Image (cartoon, rainbow, N blue to C red; front, side, top):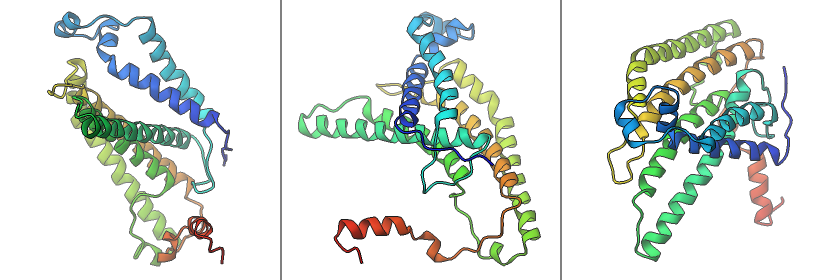
Length: 264
């Protein structure tokens, strides 16, 4: 068992740098398709090959991702055990937080220019949808690693530990089979959308289909790996019994009382 320690400001700067590099690389996807020989004639006719900045950005995605795996830490409220694939999930959880902050900024800007200056943008709505889609996918992976996804314990808590393990195996197997089926059935379409750089068909016309379809398959695969990792990590854990009190965050209540001046 390895427990990651918090590493201060660096823990947040690395995911932010990764997010910025990834955003640049995704937006300039056609340039990479041309450079690496996967582009169609239509893409070649309307785009340029990747330049130095594009290549540095792509290298930054890889470098900051690897760096992030070694610098990511955990907070007291997070699941304390971090091993293997957990580091990927926790790091992408930090990336999700950066995306949420960016999403709020985009929406705030749109509200200001639309209602304050009566000059709405053509891109804020689609960009918000695009970012929210990535947030949805990545937060699902983070929830799996944190064991905070929806689970029903009424019957599970009544079972002996050996039967709980059987249930864990069955649930994990179902997740893996679903992931395999989705990847098997969706890979061809995802590759096709990516290679033709399919866009959204609006005035802003972002490549939402070209990017989200492959991303769905990637995240589903990582979720399946995370489920297997959870099964192995939790195999020898003592049985847990859940009540409604588990939903109460004592630290949050104490902080709220303190802010209201009611320490008692």
